[in-house]
Image (cartoon, rainbow, N blue to C red):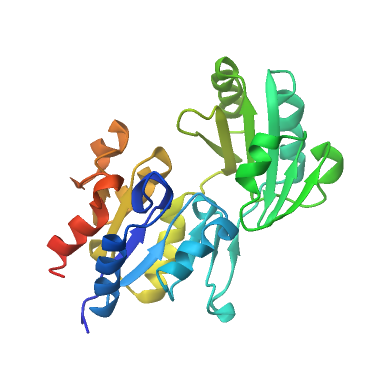
Length: 270
């Protein structure tokens, strides 16, 4: 067993997962070797738990998991570890919906852990968000929502996305953080201000008493920026956006070329 274990944080989409959303057998083999050598592997994703738990099980992890980009952190195997759920105030959510409706809005989705609320009926998005069988409710969010929410997604016309983001930055900068999804989705993802994967990863690292210099984090998108900056070893995938490659310590191969396995095998001598 390693006396100085590393904490290895894996983003899912575009990072650990191939484009077909599977984990390659080689990646699985190397991650298994890393765990056998005493290193700790955890998932840090923008996804809710319900649509990341299958990968958690497939890798046979026994660590906490970071969901919703840090807004929800818990330990699937240990209830006593604690649950960190940081929510958006309902009145802010209602304000945002009022403004979003003035723009060419396709839909607004609110998620409260594993419950999904759709503002409008939406076959295309229902399909994506039905993974893990959430409780789904459709109808005006201002009437259907009774609690503060984990995250909101605004799906709008491409040319409206920046206008809505400007409004969010002008009016709600102190309460919300927002990011834009990668193409082809014209989606703005909103969570509580100050929430990001690094915040979640710090909770996990503190629990295992692992310093930043022994954290290896992999990512490909702008929701991985803070995590890669926080980790002593922030590794951008070969397919990562330029902005992420600019802050990363190193770059590895793409998600289609087993970039994570390639880097871990070499660095940890597996």
